[in-house]
Image (cartoon, rainbow, N blue to C red):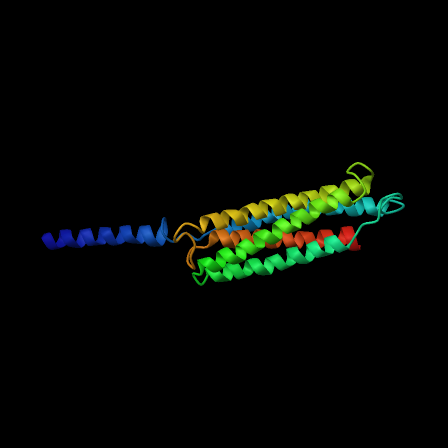
Length: 207
């Protein structure tokens, strides 16, 4: 009788262990990265709509930019582009570091990325004060400020994500090669911001 009870208890414990670790609680697939990707797809649709509007205005206008619009400078936006694209590679070094349990490396490379993002935003603000045109001067200037401003808002949010990762990294053991969702999500978002800027820079300054 005692043997039967012991066998039953062992079976219950085994079933409980299987339920905890293999089923409902322990080994759920992590869908957070998938959620980030879905969010960015939705954001892409917004940018796609803005790009489509810009290209439509351009195609129906007799002159683009309209006559009287000051000529766009390429030097500062070009430097900003190099900084932003380079920052993606810098951030990737940070993610590579944490996957080796190198928290100091994560802090260094993410800190460098934060500085580069701040420099990009400062360059954009400088450009705003020196374009020679305002938001409501004509359809080109309006779309210019909307597109670059909306992208700048995304860069700002990405910068806040990086700073949040740096803050969390100060907690002992918060990030490791087994647990690094924060840095990975921030990197995916930052790459998205970079890709959008490449498209935006091409159609606004080069096309």
